Length: 95
Image 1 (cartoon, rainbow, N blue to C red):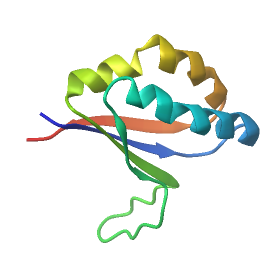
Image 2 (cartoon, helix red, strand yellow):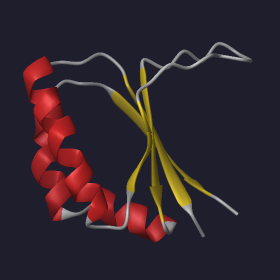
Image 3 (cartoon, rainbow, N blue to C red):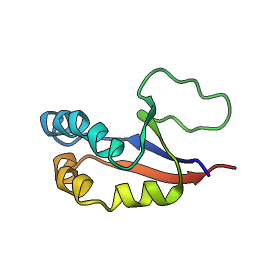
Image 4 (cartoon, rainbow, N blue to C red):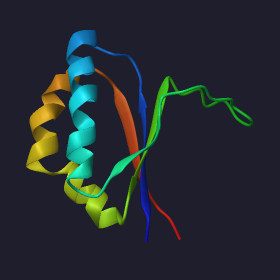
């Protein structure tokens, strides 16, 4: 069952380190069957008050693949590059 990780980057701590994180994260996703469906871009709030800053949607073959990526040594190695950057991330399983 397909799984999505939906993330929103809020306040960025260190721009340079965050740029390095962004350059490396795609390679870690691919190792676990994942990739970006959406990475930034324009959005329009049609209902409610949600106003993401920088929205990304990642797709994985299963929720287990997404969880393995999130706890993987490859991803954990680049995670410190985010530093003080705030990120919200949720896992959604599709049907």
